[in-house]
Amino acid sequence: QVQLVQSGGGLVQAGGSLSLSCTASGLTFSTYTMGWFRQAPGKQREFVAAITPSGSSTVYADSVKGRFTISRDNTKNTVSLQMNNLKPEDTAVYYCGADRWSGLSRLSSDYDYWGQGAQITVSS
Image (cartoon, rainbow, N blue to C red; front, side, top):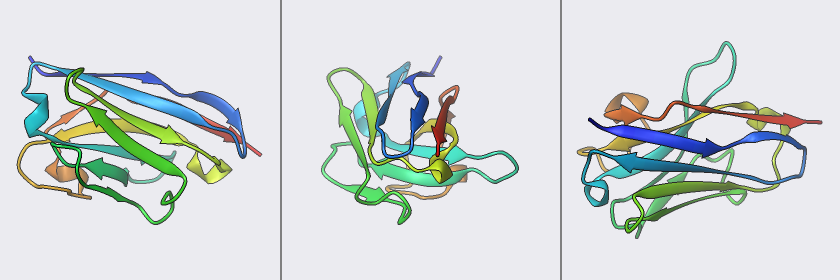
């Protein structure tokens, strides 16, 4: 069966950096767009970043552009999110997702599989 297993996350002060990784199994990873979403308490899940199957194109939410970087290694079935200059408003549970058909979608409903989530907490 398909599994997306996340690692990373934690607590950091504002201005600090953290990274997340997501390793996929049970699917042909190189054919899936991979995305990162986040969900803060009491809010809907929101798009953060996505990367095409080949890794040639990326897209970011305006709120993280210039601070976060999404990347992938198709030889390791892994997608990563490097987060720099973190802000308290970045605090949320972060999820990786895999989308086979919709391209660089910003819609969580387009993603077929999800990781278990990882807490990111940024203190002021």
